[in-house]
Amino acid sequence: MLSEAKNKLLTQVGPGTPMGDYLRRYWFPIAATAEFDDKNVKPIRLLGEDLTLYKDLSGTYGLVDRHCPHRRADLSYGYVEKTGLRCNYHGWLMNETGACIEQPFEDTVNPNNRLKERCSTKAYPVRALRGLLWAYMGPQPAPELPVYEAFTWENGFVEVVTADIPCNWFQCQENSIDPVHFEWMHDNWSIRQKGQTGPYSPTHLKVAFDEFEHGFTYRRVRSDSDETSAMWTVGRVFLWPLGFYLGEHFEWRVPVDDENTLSIGWFYARVPSDRGSYVQGDVPHWKAPIRQEDGRWISSHVINQDIIAWVGQGTIADRTKENLGASDRGIAMIRNRFFDELEKVAAGAEPKGLVRDAEAAKLVELPIAERRAFLAGKPLIDYYDHPYYKKRLQDFPWHAGQPPHIRAAFCEAMGVDFNGQPLAREPAE
Ligand code: FES
Ligand SMILES: [Fe+2]
Image 1 (cartoon, rainbow, N blue to C red):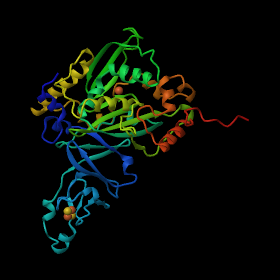
Image 2: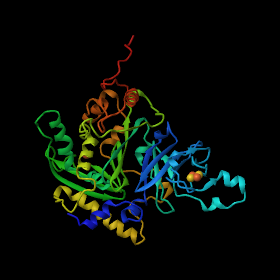
Image 3: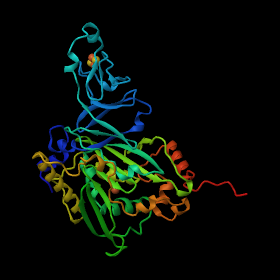
Image 4: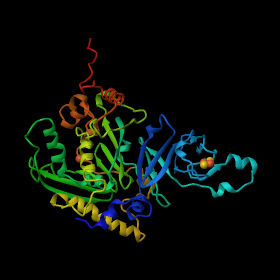
C-alpha cells in the first residue's frame, strides 16, 4: 500500500514533476520509422507535452512544439521542406533544432530584421534506430542512445507494433516485473478461453529478482522443475526505466500523459538457416487494436491480456487501496528504486543506467536466456520442435490484428504458408 503522495510521485509525468523530469533524462522510442512512409508530419503527445513529429524532404526528423512560435497555429498541419517544417498559416519555417529559419513576409519587407533570432521554438533531438524513432526530452548534454545487442542481429524479420493504452504508464511498467501473472493471466486463462478446464500450468514455487545496470531480471522455480534445474535461468528483463525485454522482443510503455500510454513493441524473428542469409528492407509497423466490436477488450493474445490487467486497474491505479504479497516483491523493489532515483537525481546525481560512453553505446548487451543459441539459426524443420517457435510460425502471438500484408511478408521471409506450414518445395528431379 502506498500513500497518495507516493502514488503521485510514480504516476505524474508532466514537465516539472519529479518522475516527469526523471524520465526526460533517458532516450525512449516514440514512433516507428515506417509511420513516415505515407506522411511527413504527425501530432504526438509525450510526457504531457503536445508536440509535432516530422520528417523533412532531406530525411531529417524533428520533434518540435505543437504550436507555431508566430501566432500558435497547429504545426501538425504544416508541410515539410528540404530543411524543416513550414507552418501552414503564414509560412514560418522551423528546423529540427527549433530555430526559425524563414519568416517569408518579414524577410521580404525587412530583410535585416532580427525577429527570427527571438522566435526559436521548443525542439527535442530525434534519432532513428532499427525501425524506431527515439526522442530525448531532457537537459543537455544528452546521453548516448544505447544500441541494444538485438538491434544488431541480422537474418531476422522485424516488425514494430504500437497500441494506444488509456491508462497511466506505471501500472503497465509494473507488469514488467511480475512473474506470477504468466501462470494465471497467460497460461491458465488461455486454457480456459479455449474452453478447457485444465490441466493448469505448473505453478510458481519461488521467484527471485536481481538488479543490474540496465534494470532487473527475474527468475522462477515452477512445480515442473527443481531448484538446481534450468528453471533458475536468466529470466525476463525489466528494462530501466520504461521497457521490458525478452530475448527476441522489447516492449516500452511510453507515457503520453498521466492518463494515457503508448505501447511500443519491437519483435524479431530469426529466418530459418536453410533459407540462406536474409536482408530485410524497411521495418514494417502496424497499430494493434485493443477493443472488440462489442467494446470489451480483446483477450486472445499475450499483450492484449496484459493490457486488460493494466486498464482494469483504473486510469491511474489507486495504490492506497492495494495489498501487496510475496508475489509482488519485484514491484516493491522497482518502486523503491524509483523513489531512491528521484531523490538522487533531484540532488544532482546521474540517473541509473545512462550510457555516456559513445563506444559502449554501440553495443549494449542485455541478459538473454536460451535465445542466444537460437540466434545462430536452425533449419525450419527444427522450429516445429519448439512450442514457442512453432506457435510463432502459425500466428503472431503477442498482439491481435496483424494486417495480412505484414503476415504475408513474415511468411515469405520464413518460408511458410499462412498456416505456418513449410512452403512446398519443387520436387527433386
Ligand atoms: S502562425 Fe505559424 S506562421 Fe503564423
Ligand atoms: Fe504478461
